Image (cartoon, rainbow, N blue to C red; front, top):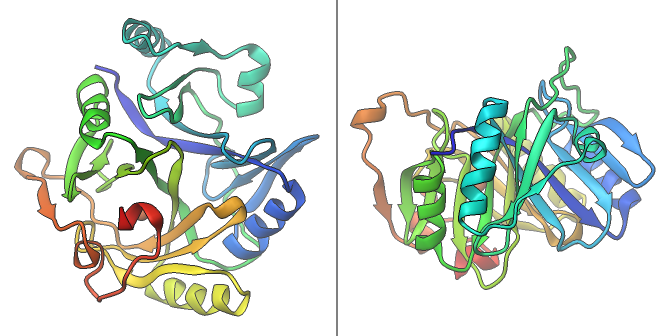
Length: 285
Ligand SMILES: [Fe+2]
């Protein structure tokens, strides 16, 4: 069993690095933590970075998860090689670019680029976004899946994810106590379906709803409340068509043995208590 601790960062290719940086700072509300010739790093919490935009193909998207020890990482590499996943062991230079001690990279069966990383850097500095979006941290990703049952089996049987709830066949899965760190949504091609940052409360959600609309950003879902995680949410469009989400009030699961995953409908009422309708391809199937 590959024991993952948390989702760590996303790496997104962009053909407009300056434009993506502008959006990340001025709309999303992240803070620049590092800058390289062809990449900009952003922090959203205590971690060194939780998002990196680099000059490249917008379809080049990677999600990273933290693993506990070097032995765990080596075992995970062997497990993934046994599954013919084509494991790449990060070079010293690649590790330095990711601010991690070591990592392995592979593609899941849908084709999503995944990294398992060891000892990602944290900083002694709190996050201070210049735009007051109320962000408290990077929290989860939605990944596209060409076969959610197959990919759920990878995350829950090869790795330690547990299904908290399902919307249709789409599993919302936790790694720690937070209701979900990974969600899978049926889609015909690989990619990150959405990137979630938690915000402080309802006021932040509503304030951002007005802010992004005033800035001509396309709101794709919400404001609303997820019946699954209880979180209030807002989804909107970012650079290269990426969907970003703010949410607040996600439930934590502490009674692990007692929790039973629930089944929700794959239709608007399964996604929103308040009657909002998603305008996101993978939520509409
Ligand atoms: Fe989400």
